[in-house]
Length: 176
Image (cartoon, rainbow, N blue to C red):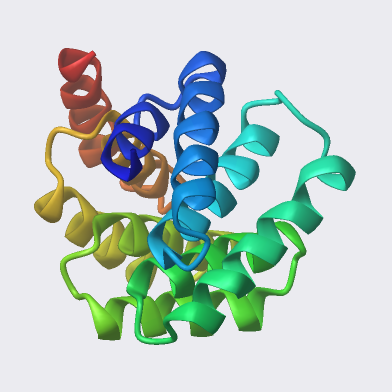
């Protein structure tokens, strides 16, 4: 159920997020102590805001509750820290967001989503060289993920590296 949830979550569509949410909820019903499922559900709620499928006031408290539950169940779980980092970003708590995402990367250096989300925070803080490095790392770890390629292209654009931004945007379009 968890893997199916992540499959649909990675589609980054309202329909995919709705399906993912249902799979994570079913996993939690079967095993309320399954930290990964709580993290997945937190990520669904977070992205539902991003994809305009839900209002922050409706889903952000739920996202935070599931991220904290995942951390309570397994504080060494990278996904839980990344989930809390994403929630903190949506609360505009940049310090907590950056700290939690760095902790996620420390726990699991190969977790592309944590690198991608950290790149987004560094970009918002206008720390362009660091943002580009994190976005590049995310792409190295998950080169076929459209969202990762998009974030790299956007980071390069905001960094005013227009040539590389165009090149990366073209690669992203080819993936789609």
